[in-house]
Length: 146
Image 1: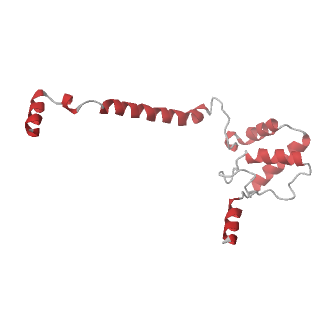
Image 2 (image 1 turned 30 degrees about the horizontal axis):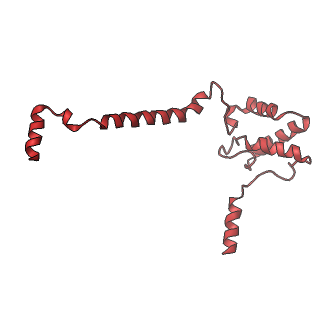
Image 3 (image 1 turned 90 degrees about the vertical axis):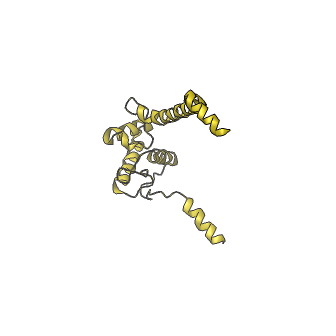
C-alpha cells in the first residue's frame, strides 16, 4: 500500500523538460529563467509551458531566454522580445490590452447576463396564474374546483 501511495505522489510532481546542459550555473539567473519559461506557451504543444515541453522549439526558446539573461536583459525585455517574435499567443496569461480586453471581460459579461436572466425569470414567475385568465376562464376554474 505504501508503494502505491508513493507512486501516486510521484505522479503529482510536475515534469520539467529542462535538460542538464541548459541549466545556468548562477542559481538566481536559473530561477528567473524558470519563472519566465513557465509563463510562455510551447508553440508546438500549445497546452504546456516551454518549461514542461520536450519539443525542440521549446528547448530553443529556453536556451534563448538563458542567453538573454546572461546578457543582462530584464524579464520584461525578454518577454517583450519573445512576444514580438511569436505574438501574444506565446503568453500563457495574456496581457490586458485593448486587443485582449474582450477576452478578459467575457467571463464577467456571461455571469452578468446569467444574473439578468435569473432575475427576469423570478420577476415573471411571481405573477399569479389567475390574472392571466379572462373572467370567463376564472369562473370556469372556480366551478371545477368546487
